[in-house]
Length: 272
Image (tube, rainbow, N blue to C red):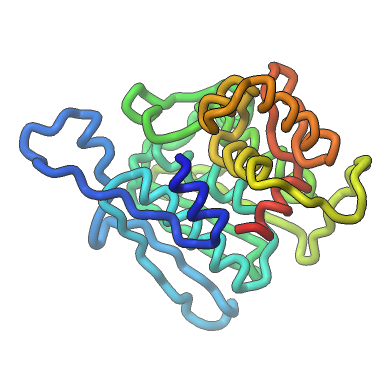
């Protein structure tokens, strides 16, 4: 985790996981870690204009953790390239949801200057769409839970983050089976003002930046889990969370855990 954080805070690309040696006799969990390759690999279609064919980029990684990270990072990069404002956290949470579809026929489409994202697959689909956006609801099996964080919190976190930008998340059935998730932001999205007691600028310590990155990765976390990840005392983690909450960068989710606010997400976007 420290290596990932150091690279991310330094602006370096996310490291690619090495392939596991010895495919023969691999366990079901190891097999689940293998991501689709070649023609089956996820694709990103970028529409520079609606009247021209899209640029299509394939994203391949040896294993699912690397695929999730790369697909989220590349999608975010193309959105920003187009002038879009979709936060990285939202993209990451929605991309992780594709594990339910085993990343079957995944296409991420970037439209409307990066303000609209369509993420489609041909997996089993989402039967109960209302429950899918409620905290705690998940259909992930034990193998899938090894590769995604905050099980049952992904889509709710994405929905809450989009609310700050007056955006919407819709879930629809895909033609021929599967799901289409659409992230839609206003053409010129404006953040809803969030009253905070912080000054015009925020100066964060390296440890505070690491906490924000961990919250982005985990979705929600409390002082104990953050302390364990960072190798610090729980009391220290609690104090740092209090300072970040006072600065308006995190807020309590009501169960002792903290999540990023939209201001925290925006600050991380600038750091990344």
